[in-house]
Length: 355
Image (cartoon, rainbow, N blue to C red; front, side, top):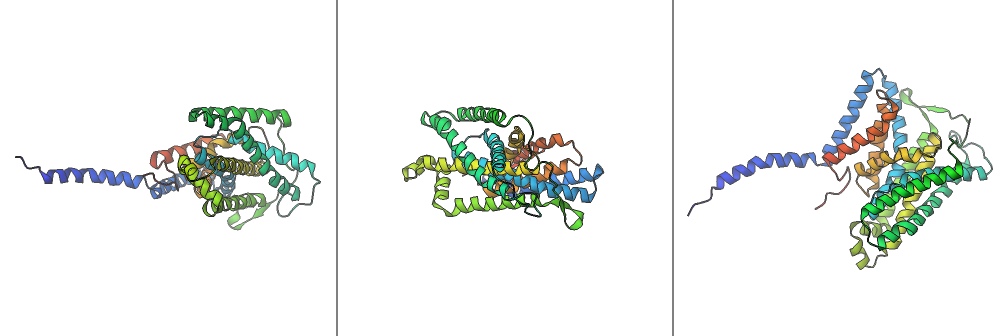
């Protein structure tokens, strides 16, 4: 009887192991983070080669952090909805736009107050923000009750959910056109918004610092909700295994309702902050949709901290790329970073590894 060649099998295993070890290293979040940082460094070098000075690149970095805060507010809500519902909600961008316009209407119903220096807005803006978040949350919940819950009860395929969300995106945008018209709007038209002088010659508006701080506060609040509250634990259980969650007595429909409320509220906050930093227009949420999806995927679906980190990276890359590219190519930068993430580590920066 022939004796198996143990040494030959060992040698074959040794030949496979280096390749397997290399693939394992490439799939790590450290390698992904290093790759993303390398892309940012390449963008800085390209900006210097195109004639942008160091101070210009520092200013673009600061503005990118502000843009990242806006993207984070929208992407966290998008990530929560995807984590629980397991479908891409293409109407999320329209909810972002709706939040900006609802706050715009609320502001015009309130008497204008004195400006909260060094910020450019008064108390009426903060009141409008607080009102817009639950209003848009209720709109998101109403859409779920009218459209998505019916699909869940019939056991529809996830493709139908995605198509329904795309239809709701067009419906909400048409509604915005009918109510507020196609023209651009400003929260404070013609009002000066002076910049703060920071070290190293960086000039940034106080509103931008407020936007970034609000993003960190809301991310912390979402993290605390998911990690320390009964509702958060129920949301995580429903996202992991909805059938098992039901068996254990969790009201998954109630969890889904709260998920839509939170997602809609965060989308509204992102829209209000984006409107404050630029202007209100019916397509504003649509142009933010790709960066929000990219941040959700890069950070790890259902992970608010990951969405914030990825959104800041995308915001910086978007702004720095304008030093050597036309600004209209900004969304393509987010797309490139998202594809890079999917190729290296589909779980994202802070996503869990399955199995």
